[in-house]
Amino acid sequence: MRSSESLTISAPGRVCLFGEHQDYLGLPVIPAAISLRITLTGRRRTDDRICIDLPDIRDQVDFPLTDTTYREKRDYFRSGINVMRREGFSFATGFDCSVHGNIPINSGTSSSTALITAWIQFLGLMSEQQAALSPAETARLAHLAEVVEFDEPGGMMDHYSIALGDILYLEFQPEVTARRLPASLGTFVLGDSGEPKDTIGILARVKDQVREVTGRIERKFPEFSLSTVARPALKQYRPEMTEEQFTLLEGTVENRELTVQAAQLLNAPAPDEQEFGRLLNRHQAVLRDVLRISTPQIDRMLAAALEAGAYGGKINGSGGGGCMFVYAPEHPERVARAIRESGGTTYIVDVDQGVQTTSTTAKERLRES
Picture (tube, rainbow, N blue to C red):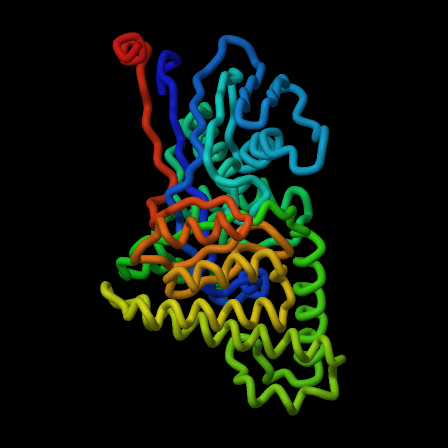
């Protein structure tokens, strides 16, 4: 990469079609990248400073490469550099960067993961090693920088979905595998409730309880597997848990079964769209009534969208607020209007590609101006 060149990295947001609250349990998920994106553009400096302009949130980040001590929780620009250095990458100079995007922030569509994924891709190419990271390697490093580095309760779904793009069937046992599902789907409408999410609290409540009870069952019944146990068989383990834990475990297994059904449906290029919508609605029912991660506002927005002609939909992300989405291959504008009238901010989106990279020389920038 020549010093006169600038890099532009574009990364999508994502929705979780099926498998909400499953990736951190090692269970399969079906995410889809969406056509809302973050774009990071940058070039090398002649000194060691990292200068990043964030006009969308009216902020700036400025620090030297010699000081990557964290100043705050989720200090992603510094964590990206620290993780890359541990992985053998080095940086001779700093960078000037700017970041723009239209992914809703703190709303369950993975704006922070899109940012850190774009940053990791940028750092790989701008390092002394000039490494063009594979999508899977980008996802792995982004997960280290966002989740592992700050000891946060999250899985790898977001990072793989954003790095690879399209619709994926992700499995995490015995290792991470990603399979693209060939279904060609129509339009979705994303609705932002404007309610702040309690990501850490909800993840901790659901994740910790399910992990605690499954660990207890596995110690007493070594044949038990959360990946294969059928819902009717859970009754034999009922004495090992509280009422709330049993309810959460039963909902987790039902979500796993719905995800497998959806993968079979989406393995066809032209799936039954009405059945796809019905499966989304069934997933939402479990998230609302069993895992209790939906909100009255999200429920109102979903009901209005279905009344306006959407085929199905669900809350998106960890829950407790944030976004919902509906599948609306017909009349998406009408569906979006119904969601807005229920108090949401709307975005009409399609399934999109993963992280993309373009480079521009100084001469090309001069011609464009």
